[in-house]
Image (cartoon, rainbow over all chains, first blue to last red):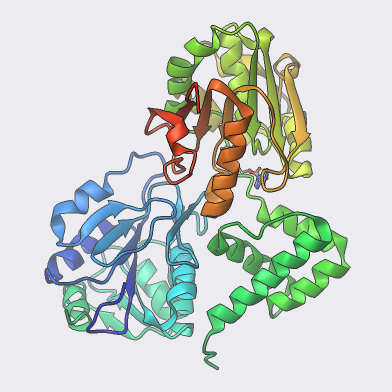
Length: 193
Length: 279
Ligand SMILES: C[S@@+](CC[C@H](N)C(=O)[O-])C[C@H]1O[C@@H](n2cnc3c(N)ncnc32)[C@H](O)[C@@H]1O
């Protein structure tokens, strides 16, 4: 799973209201050689048939897919949590899905992904909280930080819905608070492939 | 303080805790998804104000009541009537015509939780005029939840969702025909319960349930690791008549198991499989 140029092994992203456009902005900036796997929780109505993978498919060079239960996390892939399931990282580096009750009124929940990813990847993880109107992700980001990972939050000014970034900034000791447009470039510099 | 190897150390503690539960109480969680188990244990640990999993191990060995609590924590009972309505439609469309051909039908709901799934099935059988000649077995390893399943009493505020699901699954009449409403809850009509046998069964440690024509095991295997999943798939294979059907949750799959080739895929999205006629 490793990228030669960095000690990081994965990126997790949490987004809610306004997230589709924000994630797209980040993805579009990524250089074609960007290879760290990305896992995304985007809040979405539980009853929709998922369209997210199709939506992001042609927006980046990574291979986009809805995450399947127990599939290995591989470099070059962009995994999206399916509607109505939590997405977790299992102890063997595979994806795990669950139908545990919603957390922060959300399933999938950003905290659930971030906390499990922090357990597995430790300091080799980058966590990013984007725009959103609740506080999901704040505790997860805090845990990533505690495990030595790198934490990034979108600036309040560039967030369509500022509550989620604000909660994350308040709760976690955030390493970088970046305008939306700069997040992709920031990731490019980390993955030196 | 930053602890190197914190994850590995915690993993070891969790394994020892699960080992203690198994050795002392016989419930085997050792092959469940670790990420999931860890989340549930973490929740309990924080609520009890304990600092680590090793102290939970001590407590669970010495206090059976604490074990009962952990058992509840570790069995996720989230369920609905007619969950994934499109799935039930497909069962009616693709599986029922085959069940019609048998004089007597046996159906097993493994991991039935509080009963919503088996009652949904009973309603569909009723509407297909098959309920009288069907025996339903509803099992779960959690006896507290089985008791709820037997009672069939559900809070009023979930009934709206169940009704929507029932309609989306093309129910033939009105969902309210199947329950009587109380002040803030509903109770499933007793005629639907007649052909259901509720009993404890642990998929991780118990044996075959014979001669089934149809097995439902939805959203249970998702919590197991691959090895345990594989053993359970073998158990289902042994429990089905040739030509019998197996229905899984929409994120579960037979694909990676070693009985995969002994089943044919009936419907991909709905995860409906059929046991081939000979080995
Ligand atoms: C999430 S519920 C699914 C309920 C229902 N099948 C549905 O899809 O709506 C999972 C159920 O599996 C049960 N379960 C978990 N492990 C089990 C085991 N080893 N043997 C039997 N039942 C188990 C739990 O107690 C719980 O009721």
